[in-house]
Length: 136
Image (cartoon, rainbow, N blue to C red; front, side):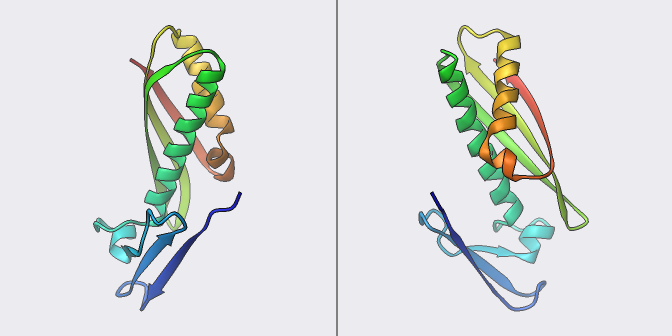
């Protein structure tokens, strides 16, 4: 399986602007700028997209692991935060809350850690990944 996205950039780094389009069409000329990446602009940026990819991948992998172990996750909510420091992406923090009937805290933590270590996006990122998992 291959997926793709296209980035177009016009102009200088600070005054220019770009847009992203994904194969699925979910992103269609979605704008990004220097301000949205390095300041507090409202457009998207690569780190936000990395965060979305990591949160989505990890949450699906966790659902698969839980299902395989005989659990039916009622709701899994993950927020991923990507850290960019001095031009280097250094960390992805995953914060998970999960509603799963019949699972012990120990089993939940074990399966969550397994999903974090084995989700394809976690494996693609060569950076520190942390997981804070809460069973509710």
